[in-house]
Image 1 (tube, helix red, strand yellow):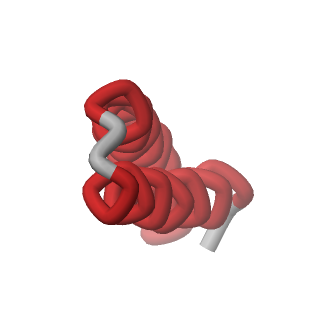
Image 2: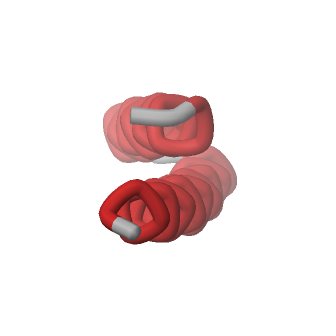
Length: 61
């Protein structure tokens, strides 16, 4: 695992919590912010996954 994978997963989890809190309080703004944070987290984790794949491929050479 690399730092992008870890940070991306953390953002995704934090975004889900923020979205859930927005749903509980009826705040559409917090729900939207939570969804955006989840998207950022998924993208960052994807970048980390790609880096890891490249590293693994390079190690096999």
